[in-house]
Image 1: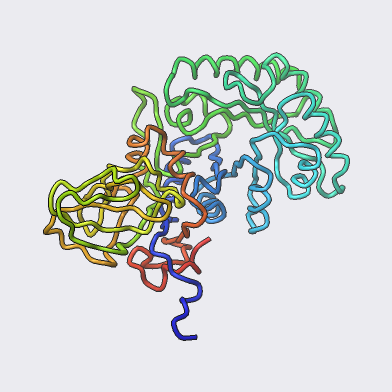
Image 2: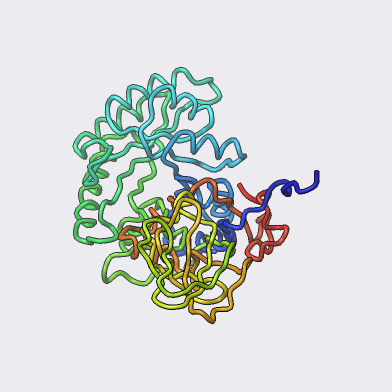
Length: 401
């Protein structure tokens, strides 16, 4: 009917994900950690990038398997046709293990109780889905989940001796790999001792995969690479490394948060801006409104951050509201409705690291904080959108996840 929105509707604010950057990052990381296998961590919707598309691109770039935090994340990948190995890193209960086993997903066992549930779950699986593949988690210093190192040999042997189970891996997690190399070495020494004791306790011929490294460990501490590395934040272009670490391979952030100016006005000195009137213009100024706010993941505390609007770096002024923010430029700023706004991107606008510094947090929180109402549009080989940043037909939500 007349005046109807396009179907699907176009939204000015969108996250554009470059799948070629994901592939290139995976390829560079796989080379850097070889001969260890690269496992791509795609939990939390691939750190806000879109799990299915990112998983496919990472596997094409050289990742050997995938890691997620929750059962539903693994099952969503399987439902989308992703057939690679998937490890659920978090604890699961017996009923979840049954469903995961039927889907061919690896589960984590972190104590004797979980081992018992895994044994029960494996016996409930159809014959074709047996054995249930499990990875034993050893806590060497993170303090979340995992058995104590001295418990690992007994648990590993019990899992390996059960005909309905397959001890596919043994792993730990590094707590300070991006900050404290000495603590990382201490953890790795504990894990090495546990590995020797577990290996001695296992039946002959049982050889699980051993893995410990996250992004920082994989890049900064070669001894942590073992059989496989679980790389998350580095895959997304933000390697967090400790002081003195060697430079990482060239990596590109795949995600940009883009929008367009929705309203413009020239205002006199002393004009209040946004809730609380916390900002007043110091002189005659141009104000431009951008339709993005904290409901999209653009946090209120980003006031004062400079973003790129109409090719110029300008500050966010006043309080960021739920759906909109305001930027301020000089009185002669030639900005108009529809002009491009780069809120987050490497190079042209501030990246996730710049957001994190401004907010006093880390890029992980910035990326995973982008809300589901922001369409994810995909460019590069395999991307459905083309010209998305220019607002062409390819940028419609139909290209989004």
